[in-house]
Image (cartoon, rainbow, N blue to C red; front, side):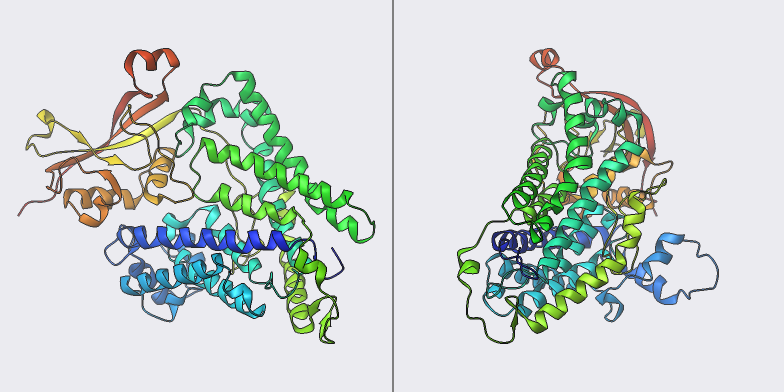
Length: 504
């Protein structure tokens, strides 16, 4: 680093800008494919109803019957507050986001002045925030706000005509620190399984969406799982502090501080790659890998050759650009008080935003690990008598169902319906959207059926549907050799139904 200019972080900027933009492509594609059946005009939780409620609701007139979640939504920015939501406008927004993000991935805006990539990333940030703000429970994941915050910071990395601003690179380190250290503290304060080193004895089997290698990881020796937990604590509680080592280089010449920071970033990347191999956490692990590259400084030939700068260049940065990026740093210094306090609070919040723009957020995941896997299996029948019926299962794309099927790798793509199906058994009651889902299945709704892996009735309307709870566990090596089944399951009982549409 050289004062205000992070001259050794040109490669890091390339990875950050293109990597974050690539995740935005995935996010907009995911929205394009899933938002309308889940949240569109005829969705399970229609966004127009939320918009109508928000427009009619007046602050200060008592508690709304729909609870504080929707009251909090009223404060979040969205373009659909100024233009009426329609499915067509949602599609147009998604395609615009895909085109802009793809241009950044190709490096086109970065060829011009720093204001060009800034405009692109701010457009992506505002466009995707407009979707998240009306996404309700289907967009209530921590990696949504993580992508938003990363996109905002990426707007101020500059272009190829000048080195990255030091203050923005440091803000990326601060983001990785909050993400990793926050997750580590959540675990230490959470379930006992993280302290007695048994958490990963269960996690590979009970995680929301297992991947192709999750069963093999689960069947590894117990001592290996304990080593995983120790490695996790080291990577999340110790390593993040060393991300800031290059700052020492500003006053202490030599390569050691930069090497220490790069090693810390590499450890974060390595641990995230293990999670990529053994699970399906949407783009959480992939964006963490991208963000961790912010700590890896490699001298750029272009940056090293910059000389004879014009008079409006200050420390190799244009003065207006320097003012803007420093202003962002000041704003973040103020906003960071709340997440900093949260990191060391007795009641630490997980995946929380402290401002309406979802900047400087608190992150964390899996403070506790479920010990058994309960799956809600949806079944239907075309028989008239539900008591004597032959029931057939609906197959989902990512969640376990068929005991012989190998779990597929979907990440960084986000299967929102499958993820929420994992949360269902953990709640005290079934969510409203699930009842609507069963009604849509009774109607053989084509849009909903496209979200599934298989419709056992091939578009025909079932007469009855029901939801049944099963306990799933991975089979042992011996069981697999005998049955060729990757899961063993036991029925736990009906959860809802049988249900049928009222007949006139």
